[in-house]
Image 1 (cartoon, rainbow, N blue to C red):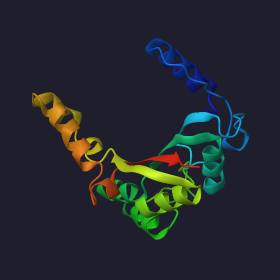
Image 2 (image 1 turned 90 degrees about the horizontal axis):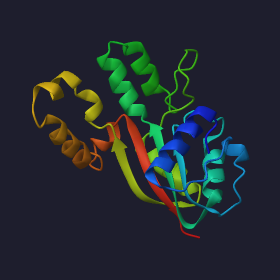
Image 3 (image 1 turned 60 degrees about the horizontal axis):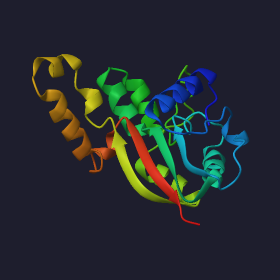
Image 4 (image 1 turned 90 degrees about the vertical axis):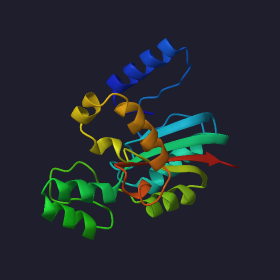
Length: 188
């Protein structure tokens, strides 16, 4: 499910090149057009931050998955947004994000309606009737390392990839990753 026709075209091209069969649907979470319980995998990457009703959207996505199927959710992390704004000198915005439980910067041009923390994301997934298989950070340290550092040090990119993988599931590092990723399964 993807609202953008351009993103769907790119996805279909990449899937064809990889020899993978997919059924990508243009639409929104409230009108998936996928029969209930028919999908093996549903991706909701960058979706829950922008929909009007995140619990309803995730419940709709979960309903589309067959028993044993998976839902992959990738969301913006509220605590990372706080740290990144503070480091960039945007202290007022950092404090506003800290004080807003939804991690929203209301009244600004910020397109996100919400950001998540580990506990909130896990609760949302469980409330949708899914079981959490993996909950990890994405962009734990890799988003913080300047490209020039990687370019200047042979082997640094590989070492960074290993560090990122190791840090992805370890609290508190996972808890401040730029994004949070959940792979959840529908058990019934």
